[in-house]
Length: 338
Figure 1 (tube, rainbow, N blue to C red):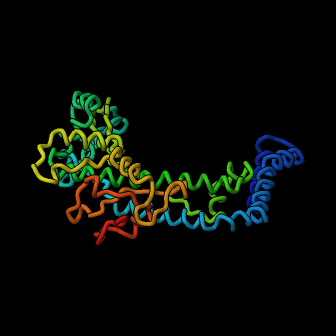
Figure 2 (figure 1 turned 30 degrees about the vertical axis):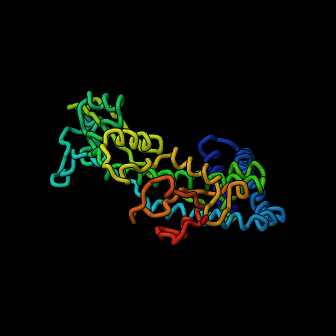
């Protein structure tokens, strides 16, 4: 099939060269072949490589590695589907669905250059001063205009968001490292990675995950009355921003004098502390990064938050992705290490 396509392209090129540039037929054929032949040769080399004994032997040798990569790719999709990736919303535009909006300016009129996004819950339409103030103090303005109240309930929601984002960030990054390791183990010719990288992964049996981290993003937008100018401040809630928001909320909250009020803040630094404490080893199956360098580890609540568990150091443990996936929100009868 590729050869038929190449022949068709060559024929079109020859016709164009002869008709539009007044080149003789032999010269047109030579030019056409010079343009098409390298691609045909490259395609033949690609086919030979993927059917070679060397490639098939490597494929067989790392079949288990590829299988685990594909399991994690499916796990990444599960995290995306089951995680919490939303927070507050702006009150502006909350009732926009009740009306119809139409720009009645003439075609090409300057007012049509910039249009405000009135209906988006993650966009706050405001004055230019608010846009600039939000750029200087983003968390304060996100809390104020997107209904992120300084309460313990909101803090728990932000921590859940941070946990979902961090898990997905780690899993996506883990997949990238695994794909790099698979590529290194094959050590394919340079032209394969340059021109056939997706085909290479497919031939190796790797399922490429299209999943990305759906970071909540909030925007403060100013559009002038005439639409001639606009400015926007955007705040993306990735892990560092979520941690900063957790800290900002905790400073404003007067915790109740209860165990819940004394709990730790579930931030990236706490998750790292737990992994350090557990020696980057799963507390269920005892596998560690020393044994498996690309091991995906997660921090888990021993007693789930959904059942009253707290984000306290003694209620947190390191689990590998397999054990955490199996555990779900079950409450263990005893500590796995006791």
